[in-house]
Length: 72
Image (tube, rainbow, N blue to C red):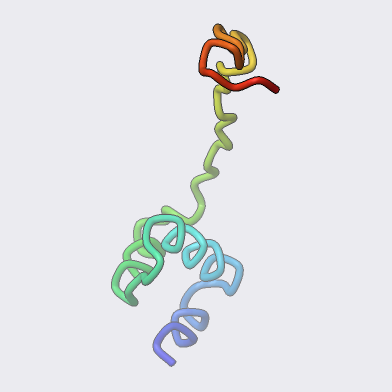
């Protein structure tokens, strides 16, 4: 109920963004952490999507299956 009361003070979309941000940090966010995110306007900060750097595709396998004793 306390989280729903925050929607009265802040917009519903801000509350959703704050909950999403809190869930990205921990699987069990507290009311206090969501309230702090809203008070400090951290929910308005656009987070950049990072693309994982997959270097394994650049080099491939250096040794074949014969080296490890497997015949495929």
